[in-house]
Length: 77
Image 1 (cartoon, helix red, strand yellow):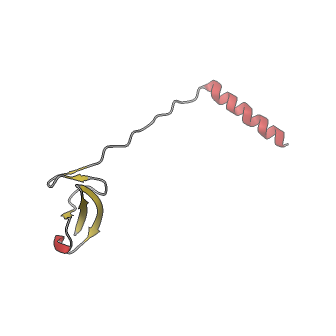
Image 2 (tube, helix red, strand yellow):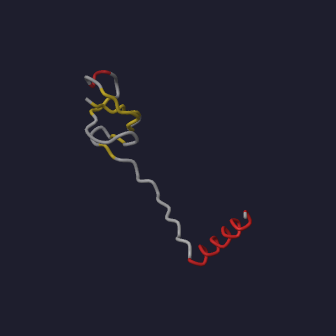
Image 3 (cartoon, one colour):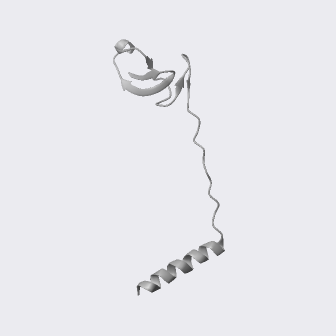
């Protein structure tokens, strides 16, 4: 069976064991994974990471980049 190792209310590892008596701090891995919290009854996932959305470049910015790269390429000839 799979078991989570819980330290300070957080799943720190998941291992395969024959019995939960194998070592202290084991809980049947019925849900969750490393980083999830366990309150003694329920597993709770960690908060989702913040997602940063970068603004899309404008046509003018892309054209300026293209011109700069074209100039670099032409300088190699």
